[in-house]
Amino acid sequence: MISEETVRELIAAAGSAREFAYVPYSHFTVGAALLGSNGVIYTGCNVENASYGLSICAERNAVFHAVASGCRSFEALAIVSDGRGYTSPCGACRQVLEEFEIPYVILTAPDSPPRIVALSELLPLPFDRTAL
Ligand code: THU
Image (cartoon, rainbow, N blue to C red; front, side, top):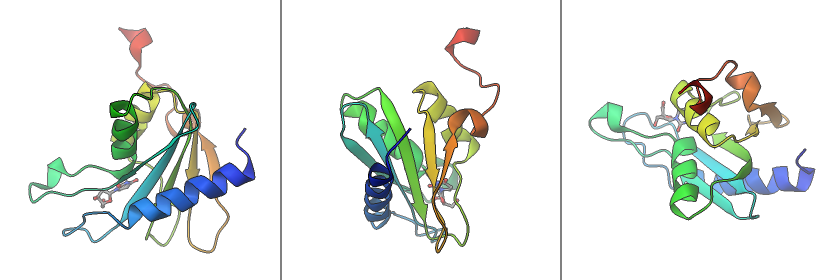
């Protein structure tokens, strides 16, 4: 499992990344922080586009940031948004998290304790490389 200190660190990093969100359309800011097995934290924020479908979520940006930096093995991902409740990753992001077998996702909400959920809970019966 992940230590409380690591959980706090990841949430702080996701919160800082959220400040860079580019959200002229939804005005909904999201930050994500991904802990690599190498101990490095990789962050991402959502980046929107005038062609709405090209917008990308904070979670996928964090994963792609890590992979582009040479890391492919992970411990946990934290998500921070300005939503009123817990922000859970969208379906597309769950599939990308599955690809890299990110075991735990830390969900946060204002004035509530973080929730640590297993990816297998968020994406049961995944489509993965074993199906190919
Ligand atoms: N978004 C994320 O970045 N992560 C999530 O978990 C949920 C949604 C973004 C996509 C879009 O920029 C905005 O939030 C509103 O959907």
